[in-house]
Image 1 (tube, rainbow over the protein chains, first blue to last red):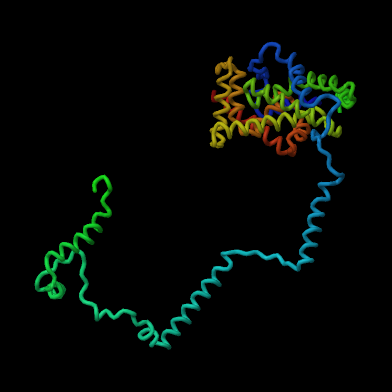
Image 2 (image 1 turned 90 degrees about the vertical axis):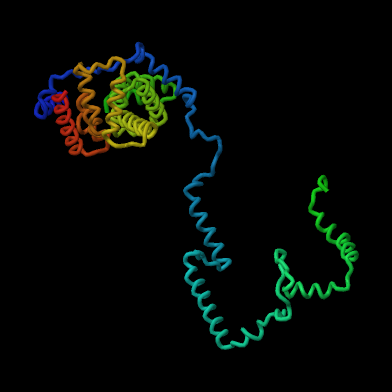
Length: 189
Length: 183
């Protein structure tokens, strides 16, 4: 039985309403399309692969069995290097070493703390400040207002007793005025 | 293999008759291959592009063609693969939405964009119903219904068992009959 008859019988069994349906293609094709297909394909094929010159398409030559033998050669070389140097291959992973680093740091902190507890004098005697703050008077800031009842004011007044106004003015002209005008731009000075 | 195909292959394998053999193969198979591709990709310009790619591949691979299978089924396999990869590229280019309903609607839209589309005409109704099938069923239905291929030949082309192809065709026929009733 021909395949056409098989298909017909099968369709009759499955969906008889499709048996008599047209098998014509409703799609349109441009005029003269089919007569020119072979010519157009020939024009594409010829410049790419000229007849009689079919090859690998690569102008370079390679030794015979280069690629099949390449992996074996590489493996031989790596094993020779490893045996000569005695090198062993291991992987370094930061994640793998992190717990050891953390444990070492923690141990170090514990040892140092225990050492400080056993030697408490180090804290008090060796770390004594080099400057004796008790000998220094109260701090004077640029924005501190000195009043006559202030200790600093009184100390300065005591020291300035023997200095005349003229000497003070002269001192100010020589030192303070030159310092205070340093930051002023030239065009404004 | 068909004796005529053996003759064409013999011409192709001889350097002096190579072009003649290839041209004869194109002349013999251009129409069935074109219509097979066209039913899948729908537009003429796309079908033309795919057909040219198919023939280019045939030219490159014909030397390595083993004459164990039919030339006809070998050509069909190349045409089917080229058409399906063209459709996959189109789907990716047009949209990342690979939902089957969306894809089928896109195929129906392509059909409706055809110059002489007429939704009242029975052939267009049938084509619309075919485009709503899943890709594999659409392919199997086209090959059996329009190209009148045996399950054995289809099995060679699609590398699928005859039983699976039969099941796909039966599902497709039922779905198309239902769709035609609803239209």
